[in-house]
Amino acid sequence: MVRGFYEIGSGMMANQKVIDTIANNIANASTAGYKAQETVTVPFDEMLTYRLGTDQAGNDVATPLYERSWINVVSDTVTNFDQGAMKLSERPLDFGIAGKGFFQIKTKTGQIAYTRNGSFDLDEEGYLYLSGAGRVQGTNGDIFIGTDNIITGSNGEIYNKDTGAYYGKIELYDFADYSQLVEFNNTMYQSSENPFVSNSEVKNYRFESSNIDLAEEITSAMQAQNLIQSQANILQMYADVLSDATERISAIK
Image (cartoon, rainbow, N blue to C red; front, side, top):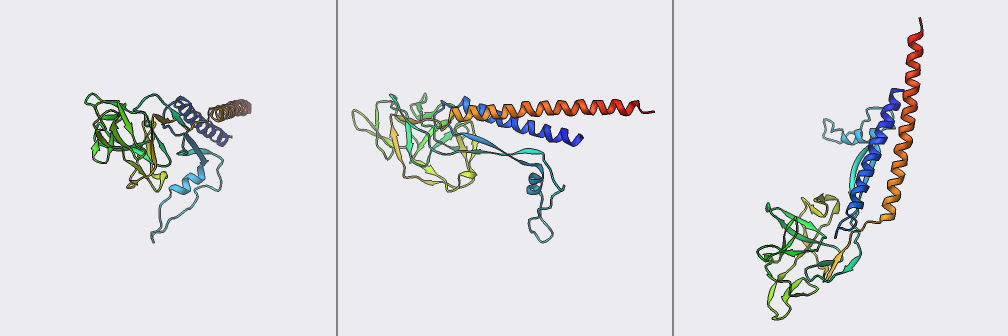
C-alpha cells in the first residue's frame, strides 16, 4: 500500500516536470532560434543501475538494488535541434543560418557561447551584439559596424551599403556531437567539445523562428495534465483505503 503512494507520487512529479518543460516551450514559441525541449522519464531501477560505480577491476557494474520498480523519475531534458522556419524580416540586423551551425557570442563575462538566434542589434559602442547575451564574434573577434546601413553576403561578410566599406565577417561554428551542448538562457549553448567552422550560408533580412509545434505541445500538455489528474484520483483512493484499514485495525480488541 505504502509502495503505491511512492509509485503514484513519483509519476505525478515526473508529469509535472513534463508540463513545466512544455510551458517553457510554449513561452518561447516566438523566440528566434529557440529549440524545443523534451523531458525524458525512466523507471527508478534503471536510474539506479545507471548511477552505480565500478568493480575492483575498473569495469562498469550494473547491479539493480531492487527486483523491480514502477516508480518513474526524470532522467534528462533533451533538445530538438531541427531547424526552424526561416522568416523574412525588414531589419538589416536580423540574420538566419541556412543549414547547420551556430553564431558565436562572447558574453559580458568573457565566456564563449553559441546560438541560432540571429536577431542582433548594435550595442552602445556600435558593435554587433545579441541583446541580453553579448557581442557577436567574427573572424577577428568583436564586429564593429556602427550603423545598420549594411549589406551582408551569404558567407557572412558585412559591408556598408553605400560606401562598400568592409566591417567584418560573421563566423559560423558547428559541433560533431550536439548531445554535449548545454543549454542556458533559452537560446544559448556551451560545450566542452571544440567547435569547427561551418560553411552554412548566412541569410540577411531573415531570422530562424523556433521549431515549436504549438498544436503538438498543447496536446502533450493536456495528456500530462490528464495523467496527473488520474494519478491524484488514484492517490486519494489509496488514502481512503489506508484510512479505512487503520480505523478497522484500531477497532480490533
